Length: 101
Image (cartoon, rainbow, N blue to C red):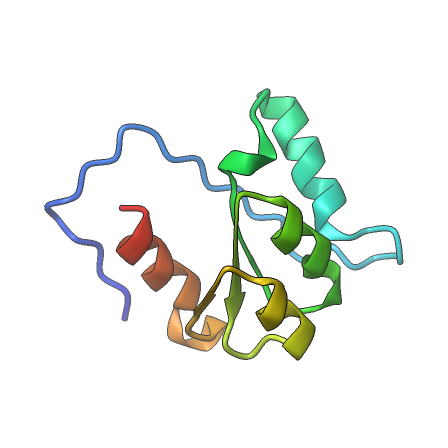
């Protein structure tokens, strides 16, 4: 189970889930990330993104920090700057706790 460190203090962290963006071929998560950045008036270089499949690839390469889960396809793991545990093992939460909080 995931537990947060009590000694951490974060001034401002925004978490946005892009969810399952795979309705059509053009619905890559990079397009969603750009839209979120525009709406919030922030740069995608400040994003930490997680991915595992083809629709995550461009986002992982173009956002600030790309993290692939262990179960990701080879192309995604190669493109990512970091690799974390699988989704089933709370990989994204553990990575955020270790590197951000």
